[in-house]
Length: 305
Length: 258
Image 1 (tube, each protein chain N blue to C red):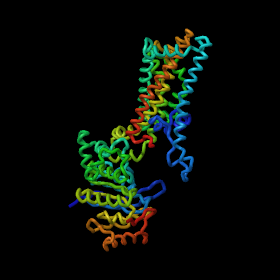
Image 2 (image 1 turned 30 degrees about the horizontal axis):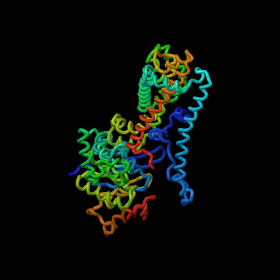
Image 3 (image 1 turned 90 degrees about the vertical axis):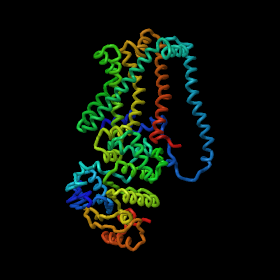
């Protein structure tokens, strides 16, 4: 299907990504990919080299952000606060946004995004299911609905959301759902296409009930794709939710950002960005990553070292 | 008197302009162990799919007196590859067959039944192992247990041992013969290995290459276990080899295995 090829070509939601996304680590070259030949001196030195590489990598990964933080602090000293706010002021407001009097905005956005992600997954699943059982709808969904949803800008949905639903939760959830729907659709469809026909036939040899095959074989096989779509949708959801709340909400981080802009309170704008960064990182590190590892272990798709 | 398990009359398989099988007539009595022997591409596997209603063909097909669309619940398949699901352990893979077939029972009861069938195949100690860590032979045993657990009247086996090493293949052949003798199941076993067919079958249907015809339906009147060096075995083998113009090797697969 052209829509699958097009979207995957952009690298947004690829069919090959789920295992990598599930384990939270990029695929490593396998032993088979190593060039053949006797081990040479370079291989004997490999452990030492790899330790050194690890140290350099750690230093770079942590040192560069620390250095940039220092640069930020140094530049802020000589700048007006509304252009480059001091980092410690930004961190103070971030604390309020995460745990203090402004946390209600953060968690309002959080809940909206969760609802929108689940709605997009459910709708995506519904459309893929329809395409699967009524194949004549494939062109309608694949060549009309997905390109349409994919090309409408988030800003357009945000304005329409306010016009149709007014200020509030519904408008924001609607906008985020509309933007995430193509991600869910493409991932789930790719998953459906990748289902091993042999396993499907095995299922068919035991039952003629499509629902049993769907629930006991196809949905478990789709899980890496569902997981990949969830992971992608959650991070994209934050970007979209802030745009939606910027226009159409009486609460949420987008509103906080808009107020900060109106009052030239750049510290708050920075703090909003840092808050999103913290939440996405924490959920990724302590949610998706262990979940992905557990799932990969359970399904035997974990990396072999 | 036993009934008829399978009746095929004027069966033809055509893919576009490719006539794979033409006017095949075949009858299998209940309780028989029929080996379908023929070269690759002659439609043996497709024939098994037709019997289970997984593929369509022209001609009259009756399985236990009914069309395949009605009789599929009396059948179970063992495929060339085990086709186990990776997210379930050995026991739950066997239970999967019961769940898919909709056999009444709680999860606990299904598991108990699955364990019993695994034990029958000597896998009781591996019941809790994830499917993907089992060896090829163990995985195929699990697949056989999964098929037997639904208590089919006919077991359809599509070259189930062809991917295994010689030793495991020999073991599994003996086990399937033992299961057949104890259960009275009807087994249709696809193979392109002449020795395998004569070793395990109670009857061998010798099929030609495309367009496939039935060359011979040969009852094997030898007791189990069968010795490949016995004069009777060699005689049966020679009779089959004659049908292939003296060729002892069908296609790329070795017809004479050790």
